[in-house]
Amino acid sequence: MNSQILLIEDDTAIASSLERVLAAEGWIVTHAARGDDGLALAQQQTFDLVLTDFKLPGIGGLEIVRRLHAVRPRLPIVLMTAHGTTETAIEAIKFGAYDYLLKPFDMSELIELVGKALTAYRLMTEPVDLGVAEAVGHAAIIGQSRVMQAIYKEIGRIAAKPVNVLIRGETGTGKELIARAIYQHSDRAQAPFVAVNCAAIPETLLESELFGHERGAFTGADMRRIGRFEQAHTGTLFLDEIGDLTPNTQVKLLRVLQEHSLQRLGGKETVAADVRVIAATHRNLEVMMRDRLFREDLFYRLNVVTVMLPPLRERREDVPDLVRYFLRRYGAELGTSEPSIQTEALELLRAQPWPGNVRELENTVRKILLHARGYTISVEHVRTALASPANAGAAGSGPPPNLIGDLLAAAQRGEREDVYAEVISATERELLARTIELADGNQARAARWLGISRLTLREKLRQYSLHPAQDTGG
Image 1: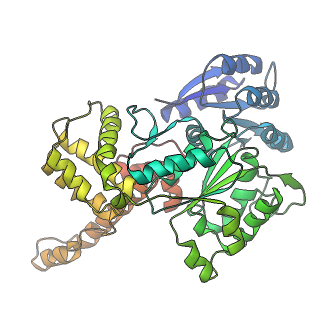
Image 2: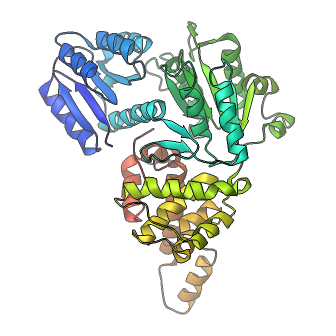
Image 3: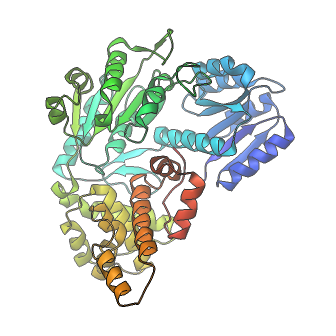
């Protein structure tokens, strides 16, 4: 379902431009020209995000933030404001706004921020079912194996406890889903849930992302910025890939966990940080501690409770349930009912090693659905999907191993003169396929990882006929 955005803006020309840009992203926009009218709409209807100007007839943006946050604390509100009202924008965040934009802003900046806010809202509000889910409209942790039953019990045992949690497991095992399930069953479920992938943010920006910064704290810091800890105040902060933190950032994180307060980079003001931290990693932290790459004191602060997720190869009995769930989910997306699958095809899927775990299986089922086109899924459909380049990439093989040799041999025979372009194209396609898969189809995130613009990424995806499952920013 397309996200619903409420735009509160009194300038007709600006509102029209914003509506056009947001609608082009596939978002449904409702417009209000007055603050009091916008507030009434937000209280009467269901929206996924509110984008409001600061100065409005009726009531202003700051009052909208204050009143809306009191009744819908998880609803992301983005404030648009002029440079002269930056301090007021900071006050808005203290009242519960998700973030703010300084006018004039670039439309790509707006799209990225809205995408991040919508992703944050989805993570907070989309239910995470435990066990076998018949519904297809939201996420689920699938599995009835003994090890998964133990994990469900552990979630129930620790969710309401005021303790930090460390989730461990290989890439693709579903650590974020476990974190969301813990959050949704906790007594902080109506407060913010903020997710940060520590591996996806450059080292030079990560401290600012987590703790915020003051104007002038470093080159390019032309205004104060609120960090993720402040955004998550009274709620839950999910730190994914915690093992990728630098030693300096580890020290600062430890201090926040010990003192429940922080100072923004370049600042002296002490800011409260009442935050429950759920951390996750696929790394061996014990080895990292031995090699002095991860602090022991931080490890024990995070590791109050550990949830260990098994790799898929250690719970193969759950593969059939996972396959059927993904068939229902992505069959609905592709406009087809859940197709039947031959027992032999299901057994072939269960026998795979799945180095990419549940995420790799999910991606494979998508490909199977495209190959099967609504018909009964056979062994051949499965073999074709498993042999596709993206699946080879998930196992770490990269472009076809004989590609360069075959192309050079053809060139020697005088059959082609485009070896360089062909190799670059094959490598680029593999890079894009693996990146968009690891980013769960999120184009904004993938573009940041690759260091290219979102527009460039889109053009490349179209060029190689790669179509991610979602594009909600963040």
